[in-house]
Length: 356
Image 1: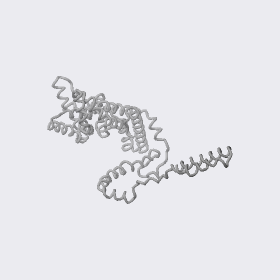
Image 2: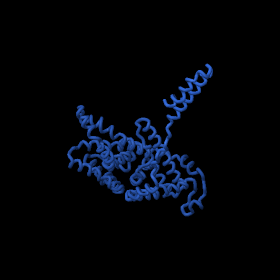
Image 3: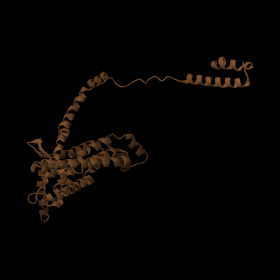
């Protein structure tokens, strides 16, 4: 208003000295001056935002304050570097006729020769079929078992009994694979095994379970359930323990019984954990419990017990064809990564839960 009273009004009242055309020009001139002045007065100078980036000294102080936590990470990093990342250097062997004593410098470069031989081998697809058959059965039967066990264990309200069941279910996990296979061979022995004695007591002829290929998958699935169900249920038990008790209280107020609480509260809350573990399990479809499969193999069941990992081991360590064995391992790894990416993409689109 001060600008308008001091500038605009005196000039408007000096109309006696101007003609009609001069009045209009003066009006427009002052109008735009006033608008420009108001616009300039409304402009606010933007101050630069303060930088919240921590300084090097601040970062160093935080690291020093939490030094013991960072020191706990060091063994994990050393393990990962030595046993996970450094062996990747030897993936070069899949492109060489690698000789162990000569190294890469003394070995001949052969390009994709070993991959061509691997993919053209008629036995490769049988090994892949055996591996997928066993792992798909495990995915359907063994993988959901810890989830079911954890839910049932959560419904036990007697604390002493619950602890006893948990302890008993964990113990088989700590039995070594060699001892487990020895137990399986003893139980399934056609002459001295427990099953053989049961068959004889019933007047039936004992069955050589270890020599019959039809029973190989069943033996693996049953032993896997017995050894791994309790231990693998730990992560689901932890997930269930993190569920808010108010959800169960609200469900009870709405009249939900225990079955409906499991169906509408427990399972939906732990489903993200289940999906993440499922994605990682799908990535292991071309892998297997190597030591267990290798120890259970014999000449009678070899047609179904020879898996891709055991084939790679025999090719590399026994036949000393390191290039072919490395090509087989690299092929297995690439397929596993592709399976993880596919499963992760599908999970992200369907359930909005994914690894990354």
